[in-house]
Length: 309
Image (cartoon, rainbow, N blue to C red; front, side, top):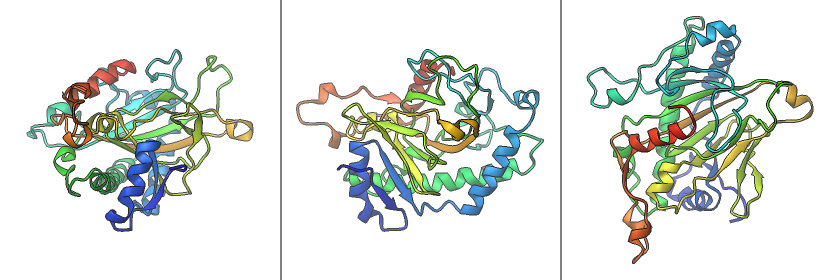
């Protein structure tokens, strides 16, 4: 395969599973059109996101929660740092997670959401967007399951009430006093199962190919850039790739513009054991497969590496 696959999620899953799966195996990325997230919802979410980030710095920082690894609420500019990076990323963001009742057995793994009182439309809009992303992600995972030779509903128990996170990102105009080498998002891999990204049509997102070359990821307007995360790479014993990717700094007029995007990090349940699938382990190579690990333990391990825990 020489190009990142671009598929319509309106087509039967059996028709797109091969193209999407091969793209994930080669590049770790695929483009998904007709994903079912309504345009008007995306526009409302964009407006609500911009309204929040336009608040004074003091107002935004009131929603920064200490001690929760940035899992909910606001993370200020210059705080997140990619694994092995020496400088911070040039971004700020807000996290929305799954709502669980207090008595839910997984509630201890997931902080309750908080909402900015200054933007009343923020809460209902982001709850709606979270659910829309969740549905699209589930359908994409069904296509992946088919590619792996499993039933379409194979991943359903693994992601039921999963610890997924919607991130609302703002990359401000490039500051003149940015540290040497700082970019909007330093090279990194995602921790989760799959990531669904809205807002990648503006130039900047790049993936690292097997040849060690940076390749631009440029979906058409409104389409999703979808990539494999470390958890799914581990589950498939590296058959599907969690590819290193980055968001580079723009030049010219774009450097003076703010960039917004909305990635949805689809996670397994915290109590799901990530054990390599037998179908992804070659006979005689069982000892080379990664050890089983609970999704929550893997998440915390990686959050410590990127200085969020």
